[in-house]
Length: 57
Image (tube, rainbow, N blue to C red; front, side):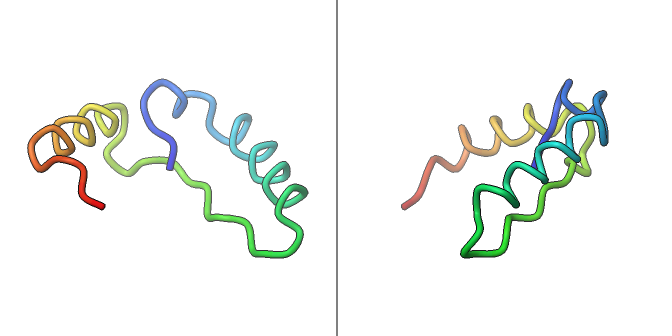
């Protein structure tokens, strides 16, 4: 998932990124690459959530 200022590039960024993953990952399906649904605040919300609940393994 991409978020923050990268969203401004849209498909200009996403399409080459998808093509590169497809080329690199020939034996497995490439991951779904999409933009964050929370818009420009997604990175901030993710960081705050991680700070609040911590990283679990």
